[in-house]
Length: 470
Image (cartoon, rainbow, N blue to C red; front, side, top):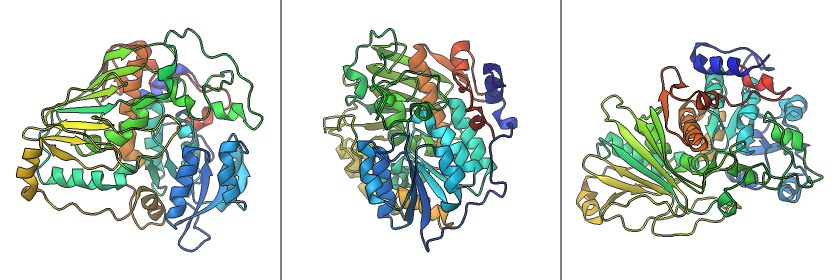
């Protein structure tokens, strides 16, 4: 029987081993593709962002789409992809996809709501399938822990998280500049995403969840909910609106943090913070994300690097202080379109400011490169900057080439999982509206029992427990 106590005990002792559960490919070897030089791909979540991902995979010339799965199969937002791949097998239930068509595909792409990423990925890995999952990798700290454990258990399975900037210029520049000593002794980072979000037009005085709306005839709501407690269907949950709710999404931090903080976190080896402090939450409520948030993450000294404070700013009225000579930030041209309102270029666009001992840098999101500020300093440093290598593949090709054994993925679960946990801790601070102190050795919140319980959140609904076991 799954209980909250079992979940918390397992979270605390994750590194000591976990229970054995799901159906698994014991050989842990993904099947060979039946199409020369292509990876047979099953796509789970095929509308909106899922459609974009499928098109990105197709453009590589390395993918053969053989199966399509969506809980709202046949709805208008799925029609383009269904028409594009008429020979692909179709499923509403991802479990049936694995049961009935598992022999047909090598890998899966997962472009479903945040709360379902871990469940689908866990089944895929246990079935010996390579996994590409959209960011954020997982919704809870515990889910990310499980996914990292599973990736270690199944070393022949390739994993990749969809923060595509990890295969673009920002990734290679940051590493090169760090290795050359251009980036050094970083003590503070401001990360910011100040564009309007879906929930910014809602009433933060909410005192209950939305009333039930008529359910689309094409939608299997029970599978959409997966392990989450039952909610009546509402239009305010479906088609991207789920990102607004603590119960289903990760807000602006989980959505954009993976595109802004990723290289800072990996190459400065930040790991997990010891303090997460919500310095400002405007419009805080029990159900959806604040209208604006300022969250301080404090990281200890690492190796030869000093302690670092990372401050996250979101909300249209909540911009970080700008250093002298900041200038105007750019928008990365590769930002995918979405239904949440497009990013319009302003003085400060989604990005980061990095404060080192001798130099200050500004950067945008996704694959955008860093710039030394002020401009006069950048000109002085120009001749000293090392050459940055070019990427051998974009993020989608990198995954498919890794499935073929030709490359290694740049954002596998083992690397991105800890950053996903940082986001989970930030969301807990937003939700609880209180500072949290975290012990990275025991992986426990030490000053708030309620927040500590939410590292795992509520136990899964009956019938979904097996996906939280190894």
